[in-house]
Amino acid sequence: MDNKDVFHRVLHSYEAYYDINTASPLSPFAAEATFHSHTEQYFLTKAAKLSEIESSEYVFFALTDSLSQEELLQLDERAWLEGLSRVNPSTNHRNSDVTLVVIADKIDEKAFSLAKKLKHYKSYSFGFKGWSNYRVILLEISSKRLAYNRLGSSLKKIFSNI
Image (cartoon, rainbow, N blue to C red; front, side):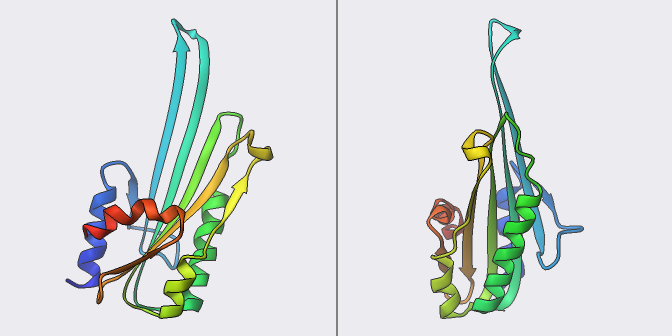
């Protein structure tokens, strides 16, 4: 199985809940996925609104033959900054998370160790207008190894099945 097949399987796993953009993704990414959730809670009637919550996630997919530490740092910075630029913090905003998924035939050992250390976090108005977390997961096709940061460990089960 080559990286294009794995890439399409990964995208297929996101299709049910995310809006996938493969036609015009941000460079250097091969695809983007966006998830938006809006929840409202009422007491008896809509006039008695208890709460309103907005949550989003922006996923950036990178596809490469080989990944070095420097390339990972560039992808990391680009994904985080682009994800933050799409956030619209308001009083109803809960969270907007950013995820970077890198699929490569070969990943440098330094990049594997760096992936575990990558972390970003941003709080809006001391948390009153929500926050943003960052997940990263690397998938090496040749050895079927995964590398992820602390928050990216929740994606381990999805990617180990691919």
